[in-house]
Image 1 (cartoon, rainbow, N blue to C red):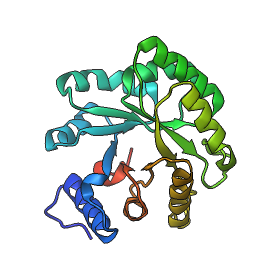
Image 2: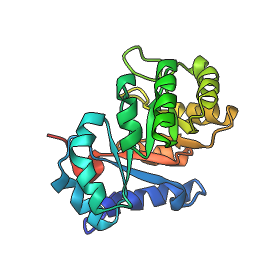
Image 3: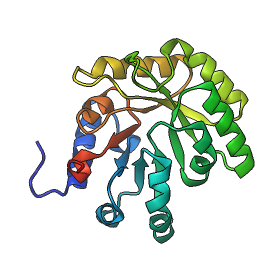
Image 4: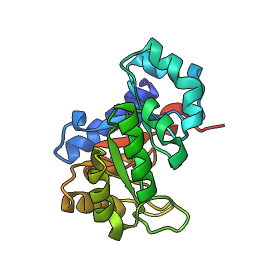
Length: 221
């Protein structure tokens, strides 16, 4: 239970630290990504002032509208793309983001490889896995992960780990454990998994990056 005298950021960090301790890990092994999608700069600035430096956005166009000025004022802020990426937005994404969590198909491998070559900028990427095999969700099929990783490496895209969004409304732990196994089987040690409702479970199962929005900003309008 969160302590009432803590700010939302302090409370989330404390919960991450507790979960990490239970798992025999260090809190510093887990990167907190504050998901700022739909929130205006005036909602984001208090977190920056409190020391949060890594933020996540779902859409390239929205990020283009609000983040250049914020980053100019705070050069150490890092911006992650956590939503689906259209191939025709690859160049914009490579210019704007410091990490991309949604590499999930061969056409995007091609687009990102070309965009990184053109920009002279290698942006670390997570391969998004459709861990619950849900038709309506983005993500690479589990069986296709090795082939997609191979093509990404051939395109000289720096793939650093795997990302997933488990099915809603059911226990997420088995899906996190499965993602960790797939990552280990493919020689990857970074895991982007866990959101406001389940990030502590994700931390205990090996998450290196958790994507937390409502627990920091409150419910979106």
